[in-house]
Image 1 (cartoon, rainbow, N blue to C red):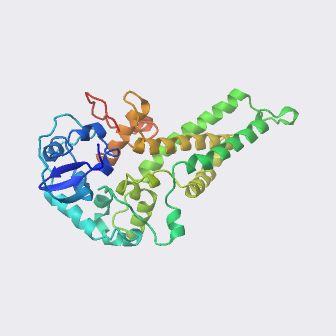
Image 2 (tube, rainbow, N blue to C red):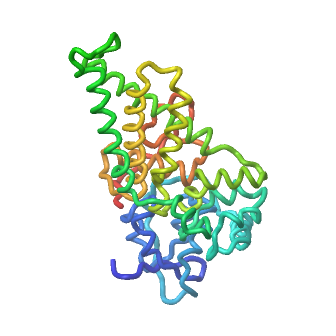
Image 3 (cartoon, helix red, strand yellow):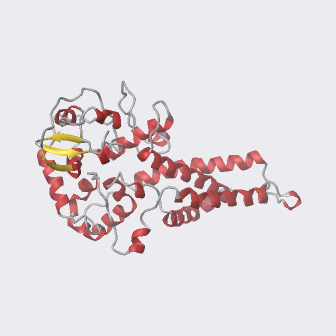
Amino acid sequence: MGSEFPVAFDGRSYDLRRFLRDHPGGVNTLERYKGKSIAQAMKMYGHSNSAYHMLGDFKVGELGVLTGDVSSNGRIITKEEANRDEKEIAHLEELESRLDWSKPIFCQLGAIGSDYDKWVHSAVFRDCRLFANPIMESMTYTQWYLVPTFWIPIIIYLMVTTYGEYVNCGGACGSDRLTSLQYLLHLMSGILIWTILEYSLHRWVFHFSPGSNLILIKIHFLIHGIHHKVPFDGLRQVFPPIPAALLAFLLYNILYPFLSYPIMKLIGGLIGYLIYDMIHYYVHHGSPKDGTYLYAMKRYHSNHHFVNHDKAYGISSKIWDHVFKTFVQVKKLSFSLRW
């Protein structure tokens, strides 16, 4: 595609080359607009006000020689809007202007105030530093591969030791001895418990409403708001191991009194968590093929980010969205998306 990907909108030129693989509607839906106007397409396929707002991150100057028509094929995310709301977009721009993105954002959140919910769900395509202190900042992001590197040895160690204690224990077994099948069932129940925790944490903890309370706003931005504000940042899409370990310790101690063989439930929960975190990273940056499970989950999670922030909470599965009536039916397309 070359080093640049110019498009035109409202008399200005934009370069989308950095956005091609992150575009929720796929690379192939953007390819046909190279060197052309995207105004009609953005209106036709229901782009949100947030999408128009984010377009500013790719601005390169006044419109030059870009011309051409647009295609009539569909895109992944649909929202029934006849026209963009110019007043709303201007308001988003004004909110963004209150912050200096070249400086740490965390200490500037007070400038957003009661408009926080609107601001945090209007995505931008830019880098975000939270803290000036490099040690504190390093605790807020991580490379995806550090997650399995950290957790897989712990999971294997716990599996080996508990299997030896409860199953392959010979004459040292107690009355709580288990068969291999029973051991496996306990692990599976731990994975199931994780799926409930995944949904519950995402819906009721990560998406709690902080209102205009600055302390709650800062807490929300730390635990999840930053991910919705900069959803394309690959360093902020998995949990850093140390905060994740602290959360696992807290949840384990809360649930411990209510579980039989709690350590095995913990192992299953950690397996479920690891699968979840890897799926979450992949649905943001991977290139799943049409017809696969991960293709469906990528489209589903994109809907959560860019259309229905208060629905589609499931990331590794849609089970609990069905149970709690937050399921979203993503539009069926007549063609396959490619990232």
